[in-house]
Image (cartoon, rainbow, N blue to C red):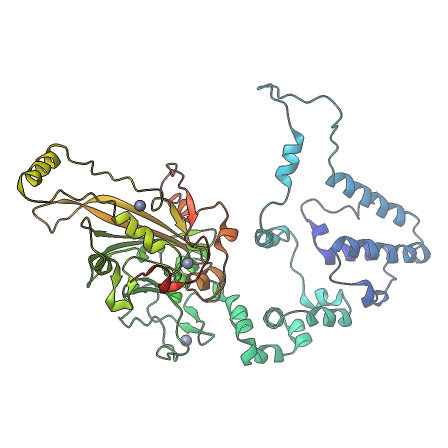
Length: 508
Ligand SMILES: [Zn+2]
Ligand SMILES: [Zn+2]
Ligand SMILES: [Zn+2]
């Protein structure tokens, strides 16, 4: 009886192969081939899987084995397991009270805290911990636990990337699958599978970087010294034959005029965070502070990694004069040298919705000094100097709320601030329009990852459903400040989801 009770700490009951071996070990005469493939429907839940096994195995036990205790012991084992998974709690009785605080102890709260609340991904991360106590075993032994026909059935349902990974794990699996699973990855239709397979080798190759256009690990030619440079400066971090191929080039995300973030840098930051500093570059080396050459705008970029995702914040600001005419607004906001994109940082969907009208609305709130001539004008000027309007401007309900792009994980905040202009000796402090943008650039697993393609406007994404009440801005700022961030109302940047583009609000 003692031999069947699972060893403490081994957690062998989590391993489907272990549990099978322990139930079969009591009846060694039963050959593994007794199990037909039909009984092993893989899409069924494991609970059904084990009960079926027990049902088919126990008649064999009683008929073939001479030990009378074997059936009883398996019953005992299942009973003790059941008891272990459901702790006895007397719910009918009086509430237990805490000896010190006198609070009623709520056992249901404890039970709820044990419930699985996080995503399936985090469960997958915990799996290696569950198997940690189980000693490694020879591949041939492991393979012998199931008949070859069943293994063949199992590998049939695997995708090309998983097949290639399994074939790489050991010789018996390579023999089972054949080396064809690797060469098949070169087929055009398996491009994504090849990238997924190569992605699994990322941790083993700190000196290389996976190039997605080529689907090859290139040697890092500036290992550890990779620096982000403006878009127009050639900055190869590996020798790539596709570097100047316009059709198959490295994916980039536009930050501001003449600045972009190439995808290999996303890989480098996230690798350094996930594995070791040998694998990439430090996130702080990516922050930048610069002024546009052809405009009035200054920018600050900063990055953060939260839950394996790279978040970016870009603060763009420019001094603004009050009462700008339409031509002045255009000159201030749109860059003629960059296809009339805004100078401040935007996602791919800036033309749709009310981002630009809100910026223009905010600019209209800058108080204008009195003008006019004659006695009335002079009186107004005296009045203005006596009672200067407060430099703090409150924006209206139209332009004040934070905006979220409904089609990508991006948020915007528009503000008017007093800023120091060192270049102007007459008036040092001036009103500046400040537009802050926060974006989630995804997990860096591939340039096809959901958030990355959404920010670039290359795929459908419903950010209001995906993010819900979680604000990217709040998550980002909480990485740098312990203070409570004041709650900002978040509204959709394009509530009607109309895609009228440039025609929608005469943006230029
Ligand atoms: Zn390449
Ligand atoms: Zn306004
Ligand atoms: Zn967007």
